[in-house]
Image (cartoon, rainbow, N blue to C red):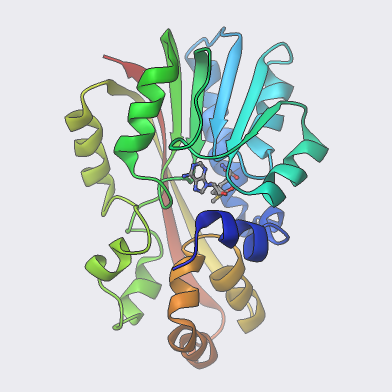
Length: 248
Ligand SMILES: C[S@@+](CC[C@H](N)C(=O)[O-])C[C@H]1O[C@@H](n2cnc3c(N)ncnc32)[C@H](O)[C@@H]1O
């Protein structure tokens, strides 16, 4: 198993912004729409796992006076972010950094695979301003159901040794409720049909897009066999949710 920092520095960063199927862009747009709808008028925002800075850029375009912070363990992802959007960038994770202030908005898009939900919520509860807003772009073990069904070498127990994704959206909702600091104030499902016209695109997505690339590398031979043996176009589904949380 390799660290998220190494995964993104060495394998994913140079591919990440291809954003096949607009998965990141759609989630960011959904989060922004929820923020607008909520009447957000804060002054400071922290994006946890800010990656290549795309959500920070969108925040700046929508709220030019918002002061921005981005946190990510991958120096290469941060280097790309810095070329797009000015912000206070911090290299690290919720386990390694401390801030001297609180934020009116804390967001994390597609970070649940790498950091346990409860740790993200603890950190958020600590650093969110009293009337602050939380935005989450979710991932769960329900992503890519057709591929999962073909992978008879994988099961949820094995997957949970690699990624911290909640097993399902229902489980994610229960875990937010059990955590006790936040309630889900708005919830927008996003469902994308992924259609891969070629073996090359599926290969790139499986090994370089960051979605569970750790798993595909650990089971490289099996995934190569699946990709080589598949019929094209190859189809799967990506189901995500955009959540707006408020403090309880
Ligand atoms: C799938 S990318 C999402 C990037 C960005 N949020 C977006 O929506 O495009 C996951 C990001 O989380 C970062 N990451 C991994 N582990 C992390 C952790 N423990 N705390 C914060 N960020 C982490 C990775 O380096 C990577 O940039």
